[in-house]
Length: 127
Image (tube, rainbow, N blue to C red; front, side, top):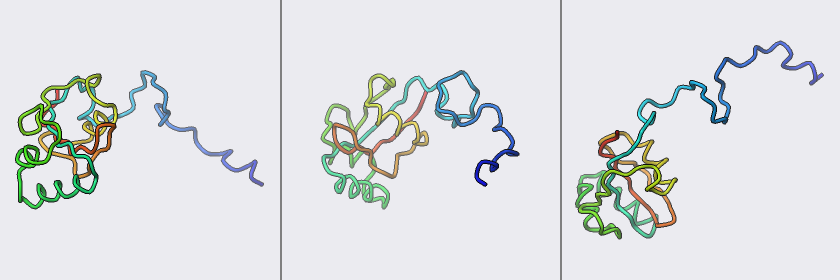
């Protein structure tokens, strides 16, 4: 019977995968632990299709990230897509979470969609 299933399973180890915000010491990816700010570049475009084309031109070496930012990004605020040092509360939460996954000194290989459009995100450094 189903009721007897799982009776002899061991309890989960301490610090299980709960979604609670407790002070448990679940291992986090080391790069994201205590990130206060990130120095970020991005390329912002309106359509996912264009974001993918821009990504391809960077990956194949046709353009550098900075060249692509100057040419395609709708955000002209920063030179070559530079947003500069940003804290969590200064960025769209989707953007911040995606940037946390990006290796330092590299860019994400997938465009990220926010209320502003499609971003290609590069993280220059973290602190």
